[in-house]
Image (tube, rainbow, N blue to C red):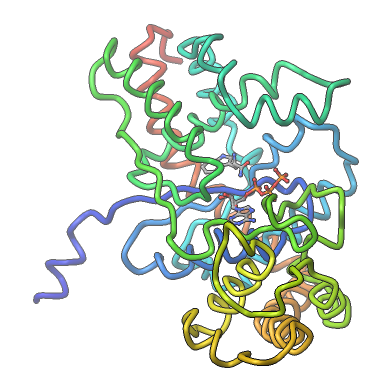
Length: 339
Ligand code: ATP
Ligand code: LTN
């Protein structure tokens, strides 16, 4: 009886997504996907492969297709059960583009100009500063608002986009009444910022130009170990957590802590009096063991294209149902004639 009662209470809804713009990294895993799988029982979860956002930067079509399917397989291999989570490809649900256009008309040039990611990406792609790159936050707002999401789990770097989404929703609701639920960013405390192994002052990122700074989720164990052995540290030869003075060592400690569940005090004692060699190898080995089952499961799933197809088709249907309801409401509010 108790159980039946809780079943009828509407769960809070979560939406998040990652662009298939590069191979997933240890940062994408520790900062995002790993935290998602723990939310499935408590929340109603929607996770998207944000392929429409990816083309704001030029892509090779075959590569984009390969990365999208690999990312879907990796979501599942990381523990996102497709029965409990709606996993879908953004371009399969046309409501994203449709609401995206409407919201473009409720988003101001000035506020888009302040987006840090736009400034960064337009500096990196100076020969292709296209309109999509500029209006991207309105599409991301559509992604979130279509599902009436309560929470949006993202890393620190995406907080500004969730805030502009809230501003757009408040502006729209201010004119038309309560159409959109106001979403909150949801930032995990651990792993929120995994740094590059070669330049620990920068975030580990899929599109990093230095491949040695970045550990890919599906990388071979020997390559992972080699990258950790080469990781930048300092001349102090002491394993101690101090992100300001010792960014390289502290980043490795953070990775080791999240991977093994040990706290910083325990790690400091474990490597006391030893050089960095033993420490770096231990972190590398812990990461290899963390990623090994995920790599094996991703490879197994990728060999079963028919299964992946069933997952993304079912996901698109379930997502379209919810998204369609919001879109119809919005179309009616702005004054479009019903078909
Ligand atoms: P790109 O290089 O294409 O900008 P990225 O590697 O920075 O990509 P995103 O696709 O922007 O990754 O991020 C996907 C999700 O993972 C976001 O929620 C982001 O905040 C989180 N994330 C990405 N990199 C890290 C990292 N190094 N540490 C913690 N979280 C991360
Ligand atoms: N902008 C995000 C990816 C993204 C997203 C979303 C995240 C697109 N739409 C909606 C959360 C909710 C990125 O670049 N990491």
